[in-house]
Length: 158
Image (cartoon, rainbow, N blue to C red; front, side, top):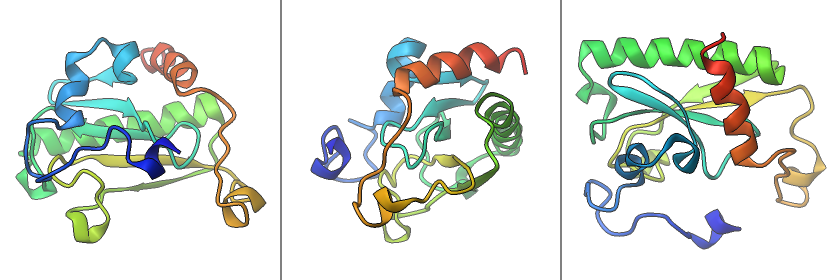
């Protein structure tokens, strides 16, 4: 409901760095920011409005809107963090598959178009049941903070 009502979503110009949640999250401690892991140029964070349990995002610290704005080191780190996240979600949540991608620009569906972010959505056989299809409601089996705690603890082990 928070997502539907737009609570906490930035307003105004999406390219504006002021009020950008992806610029503010790294300033918080990991638990409060729902950060699972921090890299050199990017961080891995739980999606506050997940499509599925364990929905992660890989986000550059730099406020850039487009994948082409990343330098070679940032692209390599995004790939490395994405691979690590996939392994982690398979090992710790038993994910059967994944949707991985990014929406570049508002017209492509980016909710926060001014700051690039890549989604990693774990999937399981039968995860699209009657609730999201008929009831238009997604149920998650665990609180975000609890999932973050588990995944952050396992990040260094995998």
